[in-house]
Length: 162
Image (tube, rainbow, N blue to C red; front, top):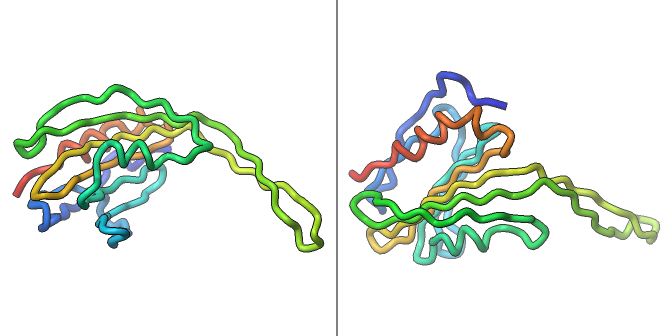
């Protein structure tokens, strides 16, 4: 699946961080704070993107966010500069797979549930600014990554310091 060829973007400023970033235009945000981490997330098939910031957001947080049943391969960390501060970028790929679980049926017997995981690529950019750890993420099915590469590049390149 591919985003529209002429994807429209809308600028969002994160005033606590003094940064701005483009998000999908006309797509609702999921925003909030959970356990000290503030987040702004969007989902527009086939992409999930967002920013998380708080005292503990790092690439370690990114790596720890994958489930125990996910087969994850982490690429090497790349060093770069964002807003005149040191940043790290890492790509993780989650392999396609299935999981089976047991459930108790209404009659008391055991049944099975099945879940399928499509191969997914996650790109994370982590840095510290204004006393916050910042984690910016892009997630797309691996088979759709090349079709959405321009949007991925636009999203990360849109980051600016106010």
